[in-house]
Image (cartoon, rainbow, N blue to C red; front, side, top):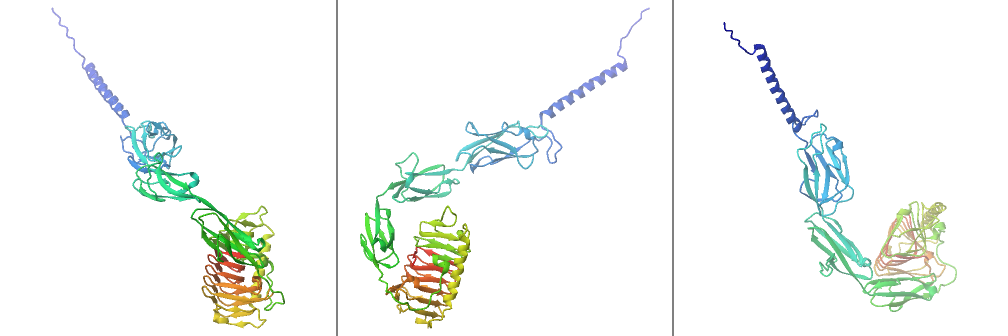
Length: 535
């Protein structure tokens, strides 16, 4: 009997084998998917981030930017919050050519914003290349898909030097946008003249012979302002006799320039005229310097007449007597001013004294100025100056009130209907309910002895026109003349005035004015090229 034996797969085993194969396939597919996921970019928990999108960065300045400021701090903004430790000097790079630029990388307002602050300013008109590498990662450690690379160009610059350095000064250097119109200027110092503009490295190729040179920016420009020294001459001004007075204007001047000289007579003397390399009696005198000049200012004794004085009794000035100029609100000057004697302000502080180049004394009680022969006082200086100034101003106000209220001798009312041009006035008390005017190029003469007095009570303004004069004869002295002005007092250009002005408001003196007297104002005094001689 033949027995046949059959070998076959058990149905249960076969079923298990098929299950394992399917499990293997699913596992393999999962591994592949995981690998692909890890190789790409993933979504984190922050709102707004798109799944699968790598970090993206934008820069400030943008790629291709021009005229970027040399002091620029680079800005970087990502589209997602970044892991701050990965945004650093190894992942954020800036180069000029092959040279790396050092700097500090740090976070800005939020986790998406960062800055790169160069250690020093960038160079003008240069192209810089920036790079953010894939080493910069977001908070789930996802890198950018590729390095971000961009470039920008800085703004061009103008630099200027003077040749020689002592030759003059220049303006116009700085950083300017490409294509912009720019202007540079050169100003020669005394003793030099401007020659031309050239570029550094090309001294023989002049760009312009005009001191003001305009051009359009197309890159860095290194300019040289060339100056040439000119001949100089010396002006020497002396007094004759030496006791007669002082002078100003001596010094060294460039050939062809102007010099202004002044003669300032001392008390008891008058200026009579110039001799030597200048003539005439114009004072101050402006002349052209084309050679060395030796000039003499001639003075003569005024010949005062002794005797008993005629006229009103003048009020005492008290502490105000010590000042050539005294005000409550301020003293300002422009032009070539010279003041003989002390000046002061109160209750205004020293800041109300302008144009004098104040130089504080070591004591702190007063200051000095090259254009004031005496001392300068202000209410905010060291003690005892504040109290002294308060007293002086109070005395000034009292003297004004007293002088304005005088009734003895009987006042002469309304002389000349307010226009006193050409008059010769004897000592006395004069009173106007209007203003008082002296016309241009006219003279008012005050004739009297050394002790005679004048008081002019003016209810409105005192106007001394251009080139008008108030002169003294017979020994009359400016210290014995009081102009009491309720309005403001205006002294015109090149006027010549004598006496003490006590003004309720402003006193202004214009260019070339000479005052022999005092200016005492209850507001301010403004001066333009004025000479004031203490009587």
